[in-house]
Image (cartoon, rainbow, N blue to C red; front, side, top):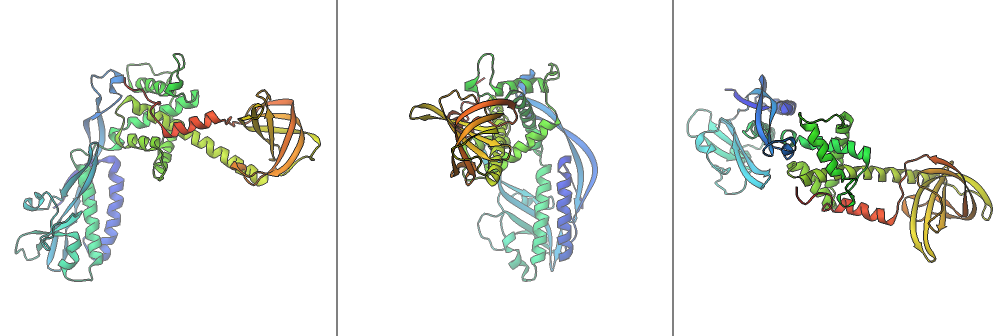
Length: 452
C-alpha cells in the first residue's frame, strides 16, 4: 500500500536521483524496485526565526515564510527473501540542533506500533544491547508468528546464507531513502538552512556590494562620519527587505548574490583545514545556525571582506610566481640606466639611520628590480608606473618571499624621470597592514557591536 508524504519541492530532484540509484541495485539483486511518484503540489507557511524582522518594524524576531512543496506516493520498499518478508525499516542516530546533538529514532509507516514505540533500536535475534543506526522489521511469509526487529548487522546471520550481500545492500539503500523522505516530511521539515536562514544570502550579497563600493571599515576604525561596514550593511538589508522603506539606493544585483555563493564555498573549504582560524570557525557556525544577532551580520560582512583579501593575496602570489619564472638581470653593474617599471610593493622598515623602504619594481620585460630607499620621501606609489633613472648596484638571486629564485637587479640613487600614473591594482604592504590582516582573520571581537 503506498504511503503519502509532503516534502519541499527543492528536495524533489535529490530524492528522485537517489531512488534511481536504489532501483538499479535492487533490480540487480532481485528485490522489488521502489516507486516514488509525484501526485500533487502545494505550499506551507510557517513562522520562523528572523533576526532582521525588527529592522522592518515587526514586534518580534520572527516572520512567516511560504515554501513550495510536492506530494509524493512511496511504494515498493518491502522485500521478500526466502521465508521472510522485510516489511519495515527503523533508523536512529544523533541529530544536530541549535542546543546541541540529540538522539532520535524513526520508523517507516509499516512498522507495527509495538516495535515503533521502542525508544531505541533493538535486535530480537541476538538480544545484544548496543548502539545501532538501522534495523529491519521482518515477518514470516506464511503469516505465522509475530513481527520482530532484527539489527542490520545481524541480518546476514539471521537469513542464514552468505550469498546475500546484494540483498543486504539493497535493503540498506531502501532504509536510507525512506529515512531521508521521512525526515524531509517531518513536522519540522522547513527548518532547513535553505528556508529559515535565507537572510544569510541577502546579508552577504549586500556586503559584497557595499565593500566593492566603499571598501571595508572595521568597528574600531569607524568615525561618526565614516561608519563601520557592518553597520552600513545592516541598514541596507533593513531597507532592502522592508516593503515600506525606500530602497532605491540599495545597490545589490544577481552578480552580488553569485559572489556571495563563492564566498560560502571558500569558507566551507577553509573551515576543513586543521589550522582554521577562530574567525573562520565562527563564521561557519553562523552559516550553520543562521543570523541571531547584529554581531552575526558583522561576522558575515567581515567574511566577505576576508574573502576579498584572500583573492588579493592569491593574485599577488600568482603575479610574484610569474615574475620569478621570467625575471632576468638587467643593466650593467656600476652603470646608470633608465627603466620603465611598475611599483609592485613598498615595504617600510626601520634602518640604522632612520626610516627606509624596500621598493619592488617590475619592468616591461617582467624583470624584478629592488631599490632600498632611505628616508620616507622617495616619491613612488604602489600601483603606478614610472620611468626611473638608477645605478645598477648588484645582480643577485632572490632567496625569500614569492619571488624566491628570481634573478633580481638591485638599484641605488634612483630618480623619477616620468610618472605614467596608476596602471595596476597592487596594494602597499607594510608591517601595520600585515598585523591588521592577521587580526582580521583570527579575531572577531572588534568587528561586531557588543549590543544593540
